[in-house]
Image (cartoon, rainbow, N blue to C red; front, side, top):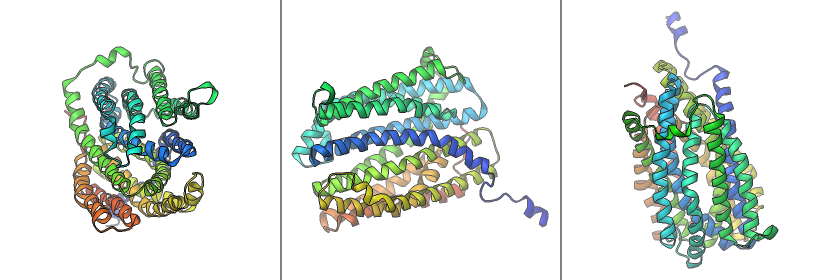
Length: 460
């Protein structure tokens, strides 16, 4: 009995090197995410200096990009999952082919979405607002911003593929160039500084398009000329492989579907608040900016966790080791989410003070932040459990099915009922919208315990 007890595998990973490696992998992604969100934050602050209408308009218009980007992220994550497992087996030729497959699929998708947004920007804006002035301003932003969709999609795929082979620094290095450039160009175009035309909200779109083109150019230079691990060349983008293409679709389709369901559900929540009043929209958008800023930390950890456990699965490690690592990822999510929740409570009022808000909008923002703080521990577990662990094991269906039930059949209908029929407080409405995160975290933990999510995708 004593010998059996001694051989029993601990519930969590006890080696500090495991957690240290995740932090090392996560750090450059966190910096990249912070740079990305800082652009949106500074855009809203700069436009807020002109008036709250322009700030609210760009925030609502960016909901379109949010849906687009999260779907692109689904394609990218699906490719990254496959690459990380092949990386565990060191099959470099398959990795080169997956780079090419991923870029082709995501470029076609981005071109279609960009065309729709450019042709019908007013119709797209009406999804998120009923205010004619907001719709007009948002449409003027979208007509220009749509030009960045294709380069942004290709960049997101290349970033994800690099993460799959543990090349994390390229994300930060590239964005350390593109995002400061984005901020400078936005300032010049929004206010007409240094001889640039004063374009207001359209200036924010112009700066974003130019920065994304520079970003793609810098990234391609790294991938094709500097990165030596897999030695990718431009001609490799013509590679084809039926099995790997089918694997990409098989793994990526449920992840893309999950991202689409989740992102449209999230923007449906924004649409519900957007129908209330401009003051509530402004308060919610300010609170959401802080949520996204702090979320950069968990997003970085998420990607690092996914690559770590994906590599373990691809290397053919035992189920006990995989279970142990998965439980440890959930623990990391709980600890990280709790820390971010506390930071939200401590820094919330200070963050609101950065903006030039009316007293009512500032009050809404502060209380929305309290709601977000309470949700953060569950959000952390959802990100490292439901998203990082399950997807790395090839299980994208659980998240997709869970979102259909928790978001579209429970929280969104209840939120709409609370807002438009019962006339409840916006705080109640936002609490209902965010409650789906609690449900998803619990389902993710249940699924991880079953161990039915583990699939070695590199096996024929």
